[in-house]
Length: 232
Ligand SMILES: Nc1ncnc2c1ncn2[C@@H]1O[C@H](COP(=O)(O)OP(=O)(O)O)[C@@H](O)[C@H]1O
Ligand SMILES: [Mg+2]
Image (tube, rainbow, N blue to C red; front, side):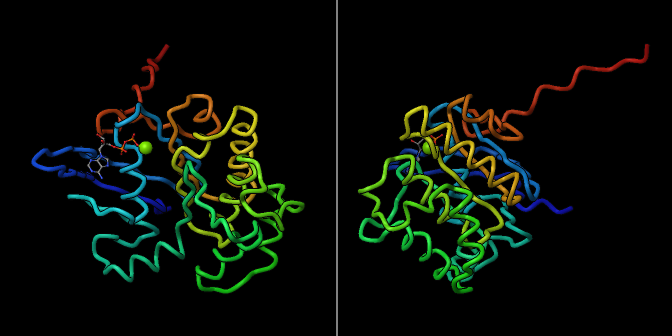
């Protein structure tokens, strides 16, 4: 089966004044439909840049990104925006909820923006899976950090995107809320078959994923070769 995300020899060089900062230096990564991948690496190694390039938020300096078979570099801005709305859900460290809307409003608006209107069944399944049924009429300021991140997760998955990209989703949470959010991410992956790519620098968080990819200095480290199984 075709990978749902495929990137080939991705480079990203930021120009800050006269200094060139190479944030990605030849990244290759394939993610299969239904995978839960954690991208791990120290601060500054290019994790967020990679996620934003995969999600079509930042153009790469060179290289190719395919999302569900669509080449992001070959699309116009409005086409890419549509693809992002229909196929990609984002989750951020700082939740990024709209403060004047209730949890219900924050989640429902994602379905409206996505363009297919409101699907009450999908809404209910998502809200139940994330344990938000009793919190729907509260605004973000009336919710705990863990609850706010669960609302953000619901918003990301409610319109059934091909992939969810999460940048340090537990970075602002205490250990108990982190555990809850990570367990829910795993449930979304296993029960809804949601493809997930999660950035973290925390090995305990990465352990929830089905595969861990290590990054260092703008590159993905190849997994250590499997031990050679010689004939007896
Ligand atoms: N908009 C930007 N302009 C210039 N340099 C940037 C920008 N964003 C990130 N960088 C630099 O690119 C490198 C990778 O950053 P980032 O992708 O945020 O890493 P990580 O998420 O792993 O901490 C860092 O050296 C960072 O300072
Ligand atoms: Mg980052």
